Length: 226
Image 1: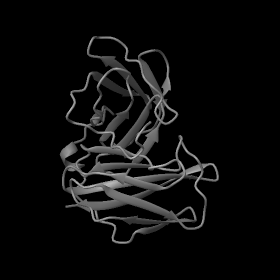
Image 2 (image 1 turned 30 degrees about the horizontal axis):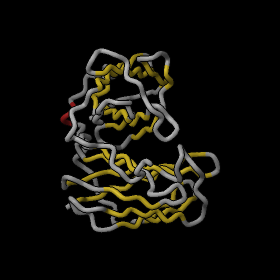
Image 3 (image 1 turned 90 degrees about the vertical axis):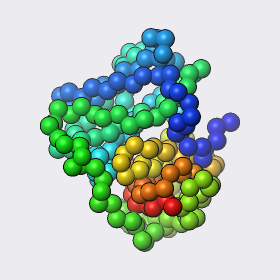
Image 4 (image 1 turned 90 degrees about the horizontal axis):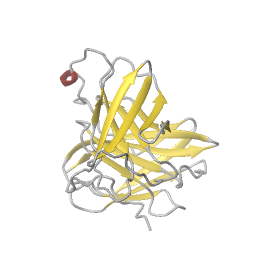
């Protein structure tokens, strides 16, 4: 049984899957190859073979995409990326192979100095309540400390979350340098209560995704881990 709260980042394992990304004519293509030069066999992970998270390196832009499999090795999806440098995080579950999610620079063709686009201006969200598209969500959490189980509870005030990719919500957390990646699911299929851990202190941005009336809404929060 899958542990829904388990972080999808384990840097203690050497990844046996190589991911290559190209971007041309507003199309992202992803190519997968294992350490033996073969196409890896993937398991479904929350109703999809592949989840693609893309963020601008200032963390202002966020995309959770599901590229279409074109053949055994390649996935692709249309997306317009403009004026920034971007990092991609490919969330897959290979069979019988170790895989570690790492940030991959997206080659947009823009001549951008990524050092000037790193997220140095994140402001911590002091208020835990946000209203987006008329739906109010209250974010309650434990103190953010490294090495401890941290409870994350999203109290939806005036709507009912609908099942989305096999759960009532998804949380993605990325550090301010767009290097560390955590993908968390609720502890049960009937709740919007999550649990995670942080290995390193610093600033992080969190995106909580919920589906209301058939549409997915993303609630961003900036947090500091001590």
